Amino acid sequence: MSRNPSAPRPEPCAFVIFGATGDLAARKLIPALWTLHREGALHPRTQVIGYARSEIDETTLRRNLRTALAEQAGAEPSDEAWEPFAARIRYVRGGYDDVGGFGRLGEALDALELPRRLFYTATPPNAYAGIADALHATGLNRAPDGGWTRLVVEKPFGHDLDSARALNRRLREAFDEDQILRIDHYLAKETAQNLAVLRFANALFEPMWSRRTVDHVQITMTEPMGVEGRGSFYEEAGVIRDVFQNHLLQLLALVAMEPPARWRADDVRDEKVKVLNALSCPDPEASVFGQYARGGGHAGYREEEGVDPDSNQATYAAVRFEIRNGRWSGVPFFVRSGKRLRGKASEIVLVFSTPAHVPFDLQEPLAADRLVLRVAPDEGIRIDLNAKRPGTGIRLGRVGLDFTYDGRFDRPPPDAYETLLQDAMHGDATLFMRADEVEAQWRLVEPLLARGDAGPPHLYPAGGDGPAAADALIGAHGRAWHAPSLEGERGDRDGEGRA
Ligand code: BG6
View 1 (cartoon, protein in one colour):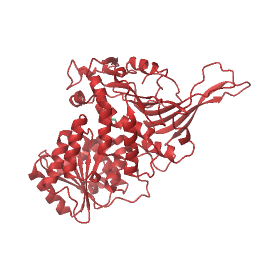
View 2 (cartoon, rainbow, N blue to C red):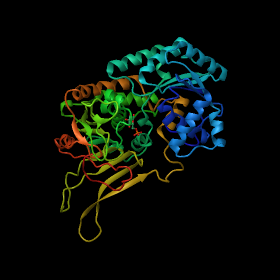
View 3 (cartoon, helix red, strand yellow):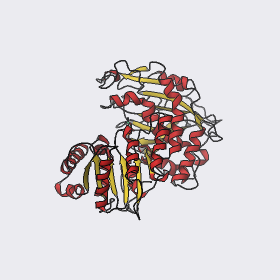
């Protein structure tokens, strides 16, 4: 869980970033470490070793990271603030399967005399297994006396079920499962964790959290961005590998899992695996795949750099899942996500059944109650329900009970990476995925990958609401998409529409 200010500070460690000159280090890891440093959440003796292939020196790495931080924050940190942070950063040059380079890394680690070591793979995914092998070959996989050694593995974790299994095998030849932390940054989003608190720390919700009162569930993740210079990666990945196999299935598992006995890594992951094993996509053929075309001043996907001009890769998908267990049998879970849509939103919506009998004369069909969990932007929780309009007689209107984090607590929600890096340093694996979870998720999406390869996707204009065929998918089951609250547009929206 994210640390609150009174939580203990992690012990000092050596934080090794493989791929220190890359995009992830600059955009996510260093900004998160910087914030932890500024908040006093990083032990003063904690050191960062950047490891990469580039022929640069320590001074250049530090300067580049400062520039990247300034670009993100919109302002350069002052010398006074930056210097103590920069002094934590070292650089070791080497290849990702180069035992010589790992030897130099070992020497740099020994010189730090820190027996706690965190290795982080911020490299291209094809380097992960080689890194684990090289750590093994140089003995860096073993914890020094009185310390620990952990390996944080970024997504994507494999390309399909076979490659994920193979990667798990390779990692476990070098590390024990409890040393491996597989990242899914959606698990560290504040609302994803708050979902568990909402369910398990309130008496109100759990009794209605089942097929008895929930009509269906929707999970939506829309993004206004295109593939942002990652065209060749996206050609390989597509929307199913990029966000369904991980973020969206993790959110679904958190919604649908049974209460764990304790909020501890293995109890939580046991419950998630059970629900993933009960989950299926009953009709992959009916899933909708889309691809953005030119529109709203944006290029189409096929015009993006690194993308085949005839590509059929899906940048949008809408899928119906179902869960075969006593709690959820018969409740559809509709999940959709796409790039280059009208705005940014990640939302989970539980749509409740309407009462069997309503004793009022209604002018319009009764709208269903909804619980809306906003994962991004403006993280928060809203309940949409029917209320009486003021005045004589009974006329209904829609109202929203809305919780946002704005000013409610003594700090805003942290960035997911701040939470994850702290948890990794603490050795708390609750928000990381276990090998069997990742494999269960690949098993689930494989039929969708096969379906996605089968034919051309529906083209949808960039900046719009996604393919109309997605309406037909949910419409065929007598439901309609919830209109998500897009960034900058949040309000009491209880409408229906596509993404
Ligand atoms: C990443 C995907 O894992 O998540 C990206 O690779 C996506 O394609 C991103 O844009 C979304 O994350 P967030 O935190 O910005 O919602």
